[in-house]
Length: 233
Image (cartoon, rainbow, N blue to C red; front, side, top):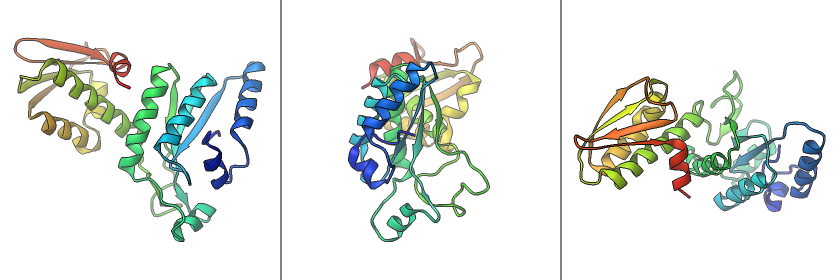
């Protein structure tokens, strides 16, 4: 549970450890041959996007075997609920959380660090109206993040290879169609509107699960998510 590598965030969140403690513990864990998994939280008291990106960079330096990313939530009967109720803490919105987590996702994937979980799993108590008082809780937040990235990739392909084409075809593996259309097609529709194009989508099992193919009547462009992630900052 690293949560943050920023001293002010750790202090305000009353985590009880320092960034130096994280480094020392990580070195020991790897020294004794254990798998190193590090967890960070976004949107903690005193936190901001710059600090979250800094934390991700510091985590990458520690070369973990995997990471988890959790958006900070206001949970009932906690000090953060007291801070929230007294105007001392404002949690992230779902949209702001996705924008930050997209950048973290890209950083970790570019460094070949598996992200084994994003967001808390819904339970009888972990839900809005139950123990979750406020914050960017969504039962499918990882799918929304991956949908936003996938549609950004399509946007990139259109702008670089099909800027003069208005009728396009997308071929995608059936296992990825839910990612393309996640959030009631929010990111897909925004991408289509931004580029002023008409897109027909075909599901094809022959398309690699990590790839998407965009074509017009005269040409086509296939791109993998890994190729795209290496093209963006």
